[in-house]
Length: 202
Picture 1: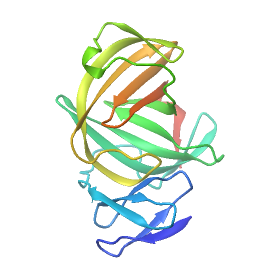
Picture 2 (picture 1 turned 135 degrees about the vertical axis):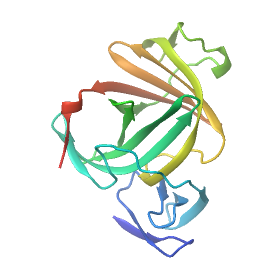
Picture 3 (picture 1 turned 90 degrees about the horizontal axis):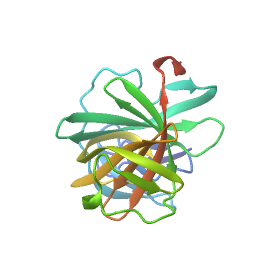
Picture 4 (picture 1 turned 90 degrees about the vertical axis):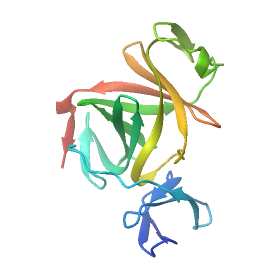
């Protein structure tokens, strides 16, 4: 664990593990990129998050399907019909962090996967179509634009604090497939739906 100092308020920022690439100061909400030389690059001010009822909080520990984890951070995404939240979790077995999505009471555990084949431009994606994504045949069930509404904690990837991005979701081989079209990157995540009882806290 590394301890760095917030340039905005002087608060202590503890970087939990080697996978962390972005952090948010828990005292003032300032966002930073983590550099390899033990310094912080300001990435802009992220919005403070209003609390909504959730089973999770940053710093909590729990178990999913026999694997112990710690909650590192939370991001809230907003779109025209509401919002959803994604919790970055670190596995105690040392594996790279994953994402636990909470959306209208449903939980999905996502792992990142490299994009290995060409994908259509976001404007060409159609709900109801079937698209090849890596080795999956994805039936598209949702396509929207969203924005980052706020964050807290620390993260293994860098996300935009301003502007909107496009995304689509669908199903393939009993998995949920999610594709984000960031400004400089296409990000693919493969998800497994979780029953409420599969997430044990404490």
